[in-house]
Length: 167
Image 1: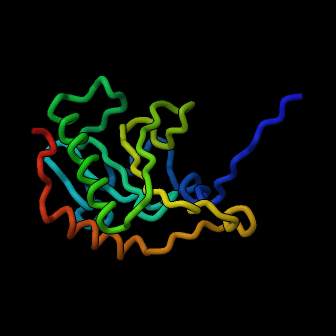
Image 2 (image 1 turned 90 degrees about the vertical axis):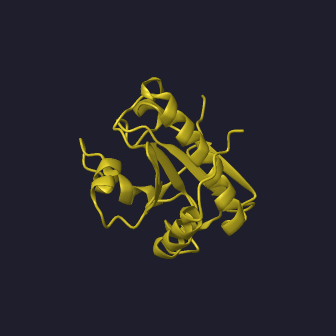
């Protein structure tokens, strides 16, 4: 008999239960002038903190347009998103000093996309030992910094300027 290993992520239940079907939290966040977790807004895309992070510094980059497939991106959107990915990694390296990153996107429900209709890229800083017993033993994920504190720092760093990474 084949046995499958199950990886539990119980801290994600808050997100799953709060997300209303047919709503786009990214578009809703863009409409709100008081969204403190959008740390940078460009001409075609934006950088936003994940309020249900896997790790401290978990951010997402998304086009301003509500699109779901990579093929729908215009060249200017893709270039700006690429630029934001590289800039975000540089900023996170400087302020949080991670030892690595998970960078990726989930396209379609079967890939694990919690929000299927608005394309977004996840950037998750990683450290040796950042997975521990807390989620398993006590149904708790430890994030060592408040979202509000990190949001202020990220906004300040992005405000210093986005340089075009293309030569």
